Image 1 (cartoon, rainbow, N blue to C red):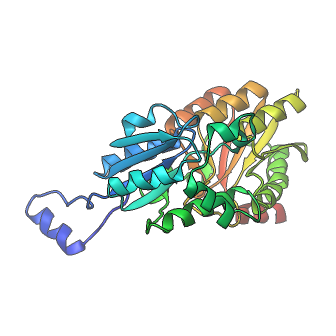
Image 2: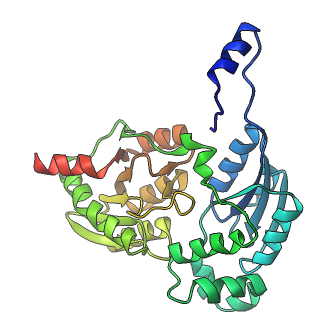
Image 3: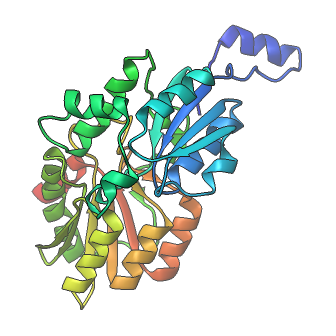
Length: 309
């Protein structure tokens, strides 16, 4: 959590037997996509005394988010102007993005009618996205469009840094020698896919790439790996992009990831420490231990050293 510290003030408070003052309350706008992360963020921010004004993407955002926010509204992905007006009306001071924006929605029949763009969205697309429609391009375009109204974007992790996974073995079970080979093999490929802004997850078995995450997201990529590798026993490698902007699209895992792996035969989950969000960590570790799935959190330098050895 954010902490504003002043040693002399803290000392004075302790001498008087008073609690240290909390950080000043802020009004935070939340642009929310799919998944549990927006809910976890909103709850964490409100515990610190901040006011959370949520704008959820219709058809993606989880219904539980409404009760986690002080003010909430749902709109289709094309209504950027309405989000701007909501945040202005509620005197939002900064904005964070959290949750998965499911681009596959844009390729379904009738998507244009359901997500009819307003003038602000049209300006966003034709001004900032003419080169391509990669994730980084689209999400950076959102930031630039809101910056026209002097909004500042921050990382949700500025308010909940404890969600970033720490280094080490998270489970009782550890990868075997052959699974370590798959982790090393898949890591560089996953980083390259991230650099190309295609996806952040690679599924590997016996140094063969079974599946690569693209527009469908991590869980569906894992399911596809299960269809292609019926014998199971594969390793899932999920990393941050080399150019990762921590304000958006930070790799995230949670209980659903583990359940999906178990259903289709995944045995190892390798993630990047200090750059991956781990939601509901105690529950995830407990479930992984129960299912016999190994989770390891590491970094590229460590893999290079182990390979050299």
